[in-house]
Structures are given as C-alpha cells and as structure tokens.
Length: 110
Length: 119
Image 1 (tube, chains in turn orange, blue):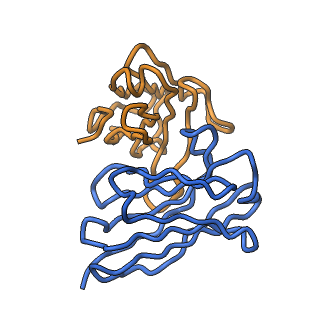
Image 2: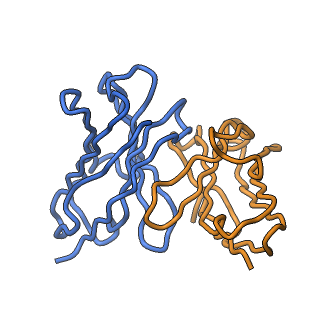
C-alpha cells in the first residue's frame, strides 16, 4: 500500500490526453514538492517534472504537472505510442522522514 | 552527460549480504551539489526508496530498511555502493542508483540491475 495513491492504469487514443493523479496528505504532497518519472522496461527511468510543475530538460511540452493541496497531476497531451510506460509520482514525507513514491500508473495508447 | 551504471551479482542466497556498485561518469560523486541514492522495484510492484548518501559520507536511510543497509562512496573510483544484509525473497528487485538534487529530484538514473534472492 503506497503512501501516495495513483490510478493503476489510464488509456487513450493517439493524439488524445491522459491525466494521472497522485493523492497524498499534508505530510507529503501538501507541504513538499512533487516530481514525476517515466519508467520503460530495460531503460533508465526518466525525470519528467520536478518542483510540481517544472519540466525537466529535453522533455517535450506535451508533459505538464500541477499541484493543488494534497494532490498532484501529470497531464500528457498529444498522446504517442512511445508514451506507453509506467509513471510514478514522488515527494518527501515529513512525518515518515523518507522519500515516498506513488504506486505507479500504466499508460496505454489504444 | 552524467551516466550511472549498476553492477553486482544477479543471484544471492537468502540470509546473505547483497553488494552492489554504481559507477558514475560525467560527474563526480564528491560534488557538494548532489545526493546519491538507491531505489528498488520488486517484480510487479512500485518503486521503493532505499536511502541517500552525501559526499560528506552522511547517510539517510528508509526506516524500514535502516537496520540492514549500508551505503558508501569511493571517490577514487567515482562509485557508490550498497550493502543489504540478511536477505529474504522480499528483497528480490531491480535496484537503481540515481543522482539527486534537493532530496526528491532524481535527475539521473542507472538502467537498473535485477537481483534475485533464492537458494
């Protein structure tokens, strides 16, 4: 059971938009920055978003992040087959004194 | 460009100690600007943070693993290492090393190495 809650899967057709939510509490998302990662099998995980809404270098603007209260969101617009991957949110939990990750969301391009 | 590469045994027996190394290129493990971290992913499960080490040698471990974990830096080889003791099947996972900014920005990752704990 992850401290941060993500939907197990989301899907959409090519060119469409998906939204991945990441829900937490005041001890983590509510008072700390959120980052987002893309995991593809056999490759190094990739930082997409940091500090809630800052895009990492070379990440296309189809990827965007936001945060409100104790929840964060990753949006992927103009969905491409290459976006099929697992996506994770992460932040610091001040009560537990550790980095916490969401359970991960699998994005499927229909 | 910073690159990280994990190395170590793919198979370890229960109750033994896992030793992994992460070789860093394109940057120094002795930098004052970053932390170095290990993260793991059990098969079919999510990511779990194992801990950090700073260039001073100071460490911060996941409380659930703290009693079994040791991280260290070898500045002469530009490597970080992980030792995990008293292994069980639950420690079977892909183990990643990463360079970290400001505690939770895992900017650069290795490709990961699969470790299986089995007799």
